[in-house]
Length: 468
Image 1 (cartoon, rainbow, N blue to C red):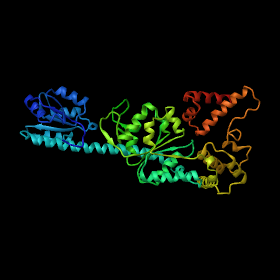
Image 2 (image 1 turned 60 degrees about the vertical axis):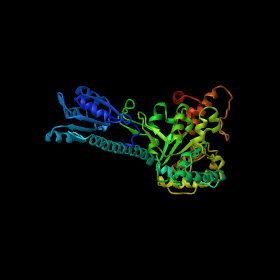
Image 3 (image 1 turned 180 degrees about the horizontal axis):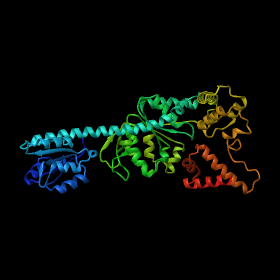
Image 4 (image 1 turned 135 degrees about the horizontal axis):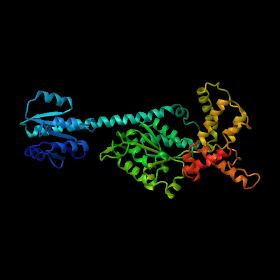
């Protein structure tokens, strides 16, 4: 039996001679083969249409029909079933037709038992190779779609390199080089906008897996219905609308890096499946019993306090120990004040070239604003501010600086002036806008931050817009 298939081979035998049918069935080891057999043509047609067999052995001459006619009525190329035709006749026309409709082998009676077994073994090998080719093609298709999305962000990713001399950044970069060299599963911890995905890409570019896939996964978007199919893939027919098989992101990332962004947003009931895949280094597609071995470095991120996330049930402790062989904390921009000028000059150069603007010196009043702002949105907010500065030039504090700074005092909190209940509505609007700004307009993350449902936040935003 072919050792590459870790399951019983499904064998289907069609012969209206009961003695011959029984002999063929008994000649195959029941431990290696799952055998179905019939001498009835109609039953054979129904079984072939409703099931998937690895090998189908059919006699040419059957009562009221032929094995060729049965194959013609039931053959489905997607099932990859291999057909063996047995005949006691020398009919050249039948042999030509058999070849045309995809019969893999023809045995003429009388034949030796070893000839039949040899034919079956050969076809099992061929089928296994075809399955591997299909799986490889599916993997390439999925990888190509991921790469296309990444290409859209290529310029943006290249512009956001790790720049700075602050001690905390240097410490993180030293850890990153070891993580990259030894392919350690690593958890990146930091506030929103500190560049966790950027840091993960830095690890890939500087490590043993630099020429392998880097597959980012937005865990906040993996709802219950998408989790298994997106990460592990699925077989054709595994569920409604599964019209063809798809490789999962674990397969696409094989030999490379899977970046699980905001891993604490994965529902706890699914975290056990993720843990099992990481521990066993094997996955199963939805609708399949076949295990696929994987070699993937797991980089994860969260903007939550990791110990609070475990205590409050956002992250399983056993999963944390699997993904957090090393933990790297990315410092917020307000703790990297010495890096502001280098970052500003870098972004200013990049965006000036992007928008075909002359590269000019940043004015003193802009530097003053940069150095005195807390940059709660961190690198993301900072780069957006410089982008706007490059586009619109020197702007006055009273006008456009508000695009980069919330209407708040230096402590980034709402200031009450009149002290009456009317200001509560203004405070609510301020808080919603602040959350939306922190998450670059991502309503899902903003709702989670505010402790609201997505629908609740959408309702508040709609009412806020209508009132303005």
